[in-house]
Image 1 (cartoon, rainbow, N blue to C red):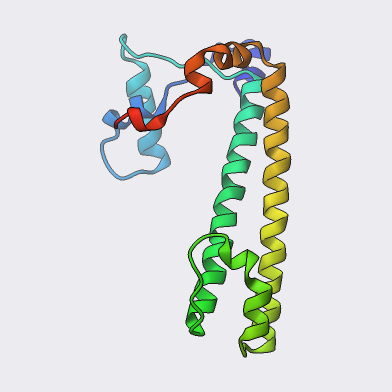
Image 2 (tube, rainbow, N blue to C red):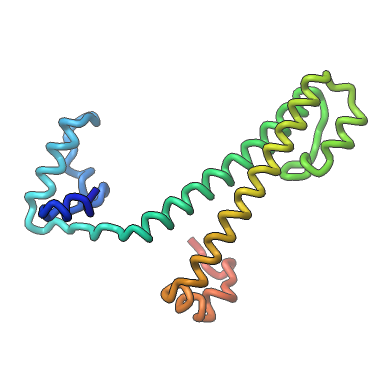
Length: 168
């Protein structure tokens, strides 16, 4: 939107939402938000944010979709696990339920429609894994093309980072 406004000759300024919060006086609605934005923008010490480039926005969208797919994958596994637990079948947590599903369905006397549902969830899980792999390969290709990304990867901390030394 900022780029479109700039094309029309305007000079839009973006304010980060974290800088607006202190100026919100009551419950959230459009009028109160607009009042808080006007109040914050009128302050001489207000820090404005640079708009993202199109490539940055596209990369952010790619990361958000990947994150959503990973959450869906976890949700699918948890759902399958819960359905099996409801019928007294205990399977270790995680993706084990996917790998053992055919054995579980053979050994148990689950209703036919539940077995079919679990198989559909297994197919959905495999679809999600495939989509995640595809997005990760796109991210890898973009990283290989990006000079800044290559510069960051060239530092030894990025390659051999051991997270156990970083306490939060």
